[in-house]
Image (cartoon, rainbow, N blue to C red; front, side):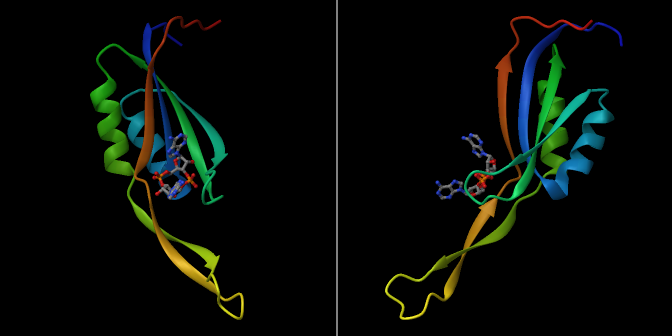
Length: 112
Ligand code: 2BA
């Protein structure tokens, strides 16, 4: 692979349902992606963490690719109702996503 200087590392936590579309959208920008399978700490649902090394000037395009491919969804968290005689779970709606994105500067990038 050609050695393009990488300036930023974008870490995007995306929902499992959106990951194929997100990878395809990033692929059309010629951005290589590392796909890590992950799990959300709060809901315990499977999600994906994408690591994207960005050359100079690609941050906006990468963010736009994630924005068009990752959408919000409502998931339900089953919790027992406090004080109820029977432990009947009450579903609580939780809005998840589109994506949780951290962008960090890269001090050093090497490929060999
Ligand atoms: P989860 O930790 O499973 O969280 C799923 C959704 O549950 C979150 O959606 C948020 O709407 C809600 N949630 C999370 N923690 C909560 C809390 N303590 N109280 C009430 N509601 C809570 P998103 O914010 O869209 O996050 C989606 C996933 O992104 C998370 O899955 C987690 O894997 C990751 N994530 C979000 N914020 C993060 C952070 N600050 N650091 C690391 N990972 C993060």
